[in-house]
Image (cartoon, one colour):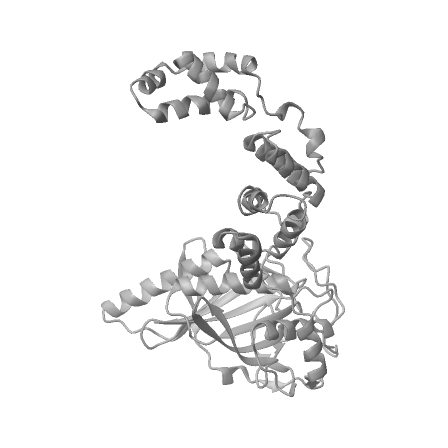
Length: 454
């Protein structure tokens, strides 16, 4: 089995690829358009310099080689989302080629990287289809791999690592709708089938797994696999035939006559190399070596650049191991639950330092700190002022009432404990913690519980 991927990534430029319209996601359709991105006759494209620079950064991060010059071409095809009936892209000489990215011990070969414009967005509304041209002309960086993957897991790991690299470069935001779309080419035996427009890592895994099962089923029943393009349907979890597979010559590529050739300047390449950031893989090695973090925890923190940046600020003022545990665990979990990146939340360096110090000094329990963190993510909060009723309870006389109530309400657990089942004792302590809303000091609760249970 062989799998190759074509990844289309939207670049975070301020304007579109070939015109001055703003490059941003807005809900109101057809409000970010002009004659060029609408494909009006006589309109002239102009190249976005920043998109070229971003594409070169991606190519450098993926160890690609640059040609002396490159140019744009017209790729002709007729579809409602392409108003001028051709897409401006690169084919004959891409921006870069012959690169690689390692996943573990394996090197995934990068065939080519090219820049192009995104078509418009089709909105299916019952019996008819609407077209939103806000997305038309959005800069895309297409990354094409060789068929280097032999299973679905490799493809998923590659996409996760690629996404992290693009985020560290500052050229890509995974939270934007449709910011990364994948076309997968897969052949179980000989004939290659393309699956188009898969969004999200989970859907890539599902689509590939489905196609593997489908092709194996056909081969077992003596049926021929046709070379074709299929579409992924995330609702039904299946792929469906779109059209027979085109050859590249079917697109009738010609050089775009309204754009000049672009020279790849060695001086510019050297300048960009100096601006390359420390990527996740390098951070993980540094964290493990310098702070003795476990590999898994270091990887969880380093996977997102803004999370790693905040972590490195916080550990200058708090215990490294405690901060790492919280950043890789509760902080990341709370942000994911609210579909937020740390830079989009209300968390601050000062607030997190205060919270972690209160946990370290046992001024509040971890449970209380978790509840406080949920507030801090969503609204500006000073944890020292907000702690109020969340302070840890050490007073035995205050805890005695909760202990007595717990013993009275859980007679069977008391019997189990007295018959030698230690887990029953832990259960009773947990019930007291629940009654005190996580504020009771566990050691003190255990002491009081032993006093009443004997």
